[in-house]
Amino acid sequence: MGFLRRALQMPGTVLLLMLAAVIATYIAYGRFGVGVEFFPSTEPDYARIQVQARGDLSVYEKDELVRAVEARIERFEEIDFSYARTFADPTRTGGQSLARDAIGVVQLDFVDWTERRPASEIITDIRDSVADIPGIRVQITEQQEGPGQAKPVELQVSGEPDRLAAGVEALRARMTELGGFADVEDNRPLPGIEWALRVDREMAARYGADVQLVGNAVQLVTNGVLIADYRPDDADDEVDIRVRFPVEARSLDSLGQLRVPTRFGQVPVSNFVDFVPAPKTGTLERINGERVLTINADVEAGRLVDERVQALRASLSQEPLPSGISVQFKGEDEDQREAQSFLSRAFVIAIALMGIILVTQFNSVYQALLVLSAIVLSTAGVLLGLMLTQRPFGIVMGGVGMIALAGIVVNNNIVLIDTYNALRAEGMPVPEAILRTAAQRLRPVLLTSITTVLGLMPMVLKLNIDLISRSIEFNAPSTQWWAQLSATIAGGLSFATVLTLILTPCLLMLGANLSEAMGRWRVRPGGHGVSGEAR
Image 1 (cartoon, rainbow, N blue to C red):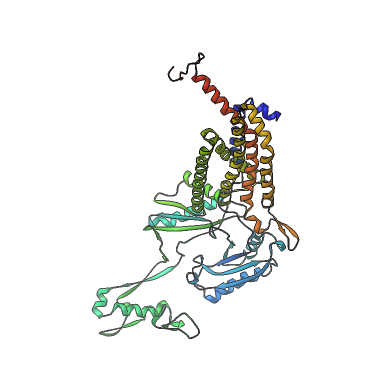
Image 2 (cartoon, rainbow, N blue to C red):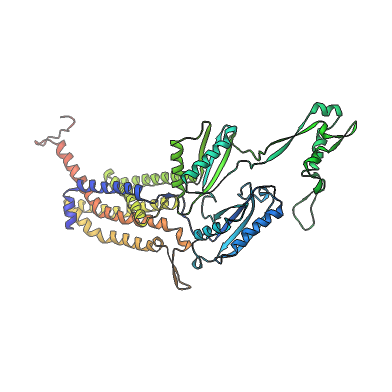
């Protein structure tokens, strides 16, 4: 009480010191804090290896490469189960998010987390073990929990179609220069040649050839002519019945030797059809009518997505891409901005609603603002706790925690101010009322804060107590979900307790001093009520 008595003698100084401490905390977190993340990452139970290779490979050659990767994985005792799948065309795999040059996937199930190393270390060893397999590259993605996607970094490159490919290449080079990105891929067409059939319609008309018959004849060499479909009795899907040449007859030479019926008999299609090689185009994608190419990437272990995205955005602002090319940040960055905007609005609306209730109950705008200021200032405690524990601030879980923190902070201040108003109504002087309030409400405020913080400590420390097996586990995957939420509330409440017991009494004293000073300013020494404005 002696400390509080001295603080009440200089409430303005205490307020300035507290504001300086809050500002210093924000600056320190900006320099020494870990950063920001969208959603907490948890220890995965499984991972997926995507095997990629380029070339005119048969499905058997692709399967041999996938088997080579699977054989390397079998050496790891920390993998409980693996399932491999090879496919000829990645676009016909049920809508999986696969690269255009993917030839297969290997699904991995890890053993229980208590019996193995962290998944990030296992994945690093898997990358090293398959690095020397010629002709392939692998992408390994962990199990994704919560919102987001397998590759959190997504960039949409738009602009003039003839410059898009060069813009994507320049952007990928910029990402390589910055570092920190992993498994970078884009949806540019794979290198290759497509044979375009150009029909001279004038010559075809002279021969009396039907262009549709030309197309059917070409299909005999390529995918085959669809003549019917059939559904077996033991299947739900229909099977196409197609007619095409034998395997040995499906070549470019066969295209030139094709004959179609005309009024002059069987005529080679080479008389009025030219086969022209052209770069392979693949699938063209447009968003809002504009041609776009997409770059997807993950980040290296130990890196934050937000930190790498901000670094890339800063690099693009300093050294823009060639003219005519624009980049939009999608993926987790877009989701993070949307979640941040929603939680910010929710936080402001919550404070506004609490302010309305406080004004109606206290009948004092100053006391309502005093309570609400404690909510805003308590955010410094959140950042201080995250900085001391070296944890990133979670947009989703941390934002929800700050909204929950506001309700607890308000309760402690309401208890304090309500007792102060009751004592003042009995005619007690301001300094004595403040000291009596602090003495009477010290125990309730401390008990509320201490019990809440201690109750949150198991989640803050990622402590899991299994009563059935009578074991205590640290850093279990189930606890990683709630560490940010609990740390936000615990850190902010600890700091807010100091604000409630020290700053709130000083602000009450400061308000009383200002009210007294305003009263002396408005009344002249003779006792006549003349306002300062009139004088």
